[in-house]
Length: 258
Image (cartoon, rainbow, N blue to C red; front, side, top):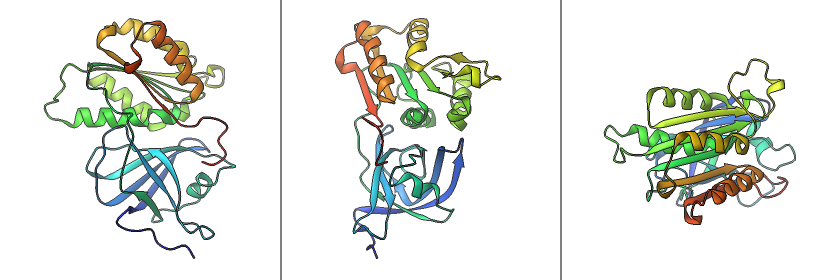
């Protein structure tokens, strides 16, 4: 029997529901027993106790939520030959998960600029959702001059799930936010009327249209490493300084331990 994790280092989360977008893309909604402190864009280390392991089986996932709330979301892709995600897919509401108390990461809003170009593949949009929720939650935003362009892509429209709806609403009601969902397999999405192509294929078009000044712009890339490399190359060719290009790769090679 595995021992319970140290409560000084871990929070016990309760799964309230799993919201599935496809067979292998879902959001885990969890409740923490106390407010969770973090900076929007950071990630938490989350997992389960497993009978044959002396310590919890943990993996890092971007936190979706607003700081000091108890409700958190984790936007995940199931990896069939992974160790953790198949177990997470088997959980029923009321199940317990463990999360390290310290939420970490440097993939946060670049406060040295006011224009933000955010590129994401599927679940990589999570950090941006946290950033925008928090930015919008302020009754008087401290950074009134901020402008956001979010490019969010997947192979299929259904992979973008509820976050497509949420970000579309933000863009419709806030002039500071532009949101561009895109699908790379439009022939398999016959009802799709939005942008078509991979994230890196449409990034330059919408970045140019936004008219963001290069000396006041940061580029953020999150998700699939191939998209990140290609999107960053676009930023480099545009002469964006290296310190203004930020990344969060969700995996490096073939994922076998997620």
